Image (cartoon, rainbow, N blue to C red; front, side, top):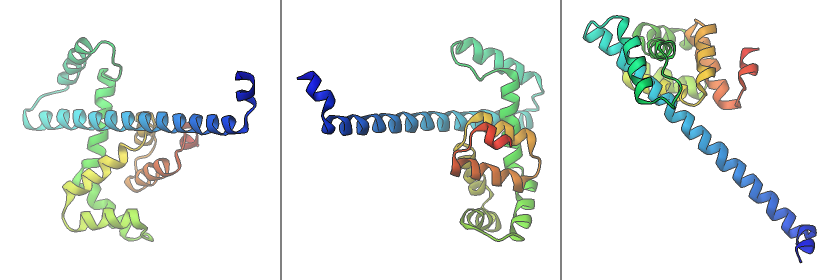
Length: 179
């Protein structure tokens, strides 16, 4: 009976469907985990930035925080001082009011698509908090390594937005993004 089952076209089609559903669920779970980690990194970066501004904490807070987090979570990577600085830099790059205002001017000169129209509308209506949240969600759509590549290689805010969106939309690998 087992031999007959393996040769059955119904079984082969059903097996193919199951494999596809498993792959899809696995990919969906990985994206959800990535999104949550990026949002966590954003919160950590924002916290460092805020504490340094509000409390006057210096650079040593990042080293201390890295050591404390690695001690508490030894099996979780991503909490090195270098990565914490990257988290702070990411938030600073996408939260700077001057950069957001500049983006409105630059984007206003372009042919506006739906994404850019939404961002411009939020910025023009003085809803910078909502615009920052919109950017945060966009950043969370792509892997951390992709975000760092964009942050490190591109200084122009408008270009960063393009590559963030294109990477999220087309699922670019890091090598494709690099090229």
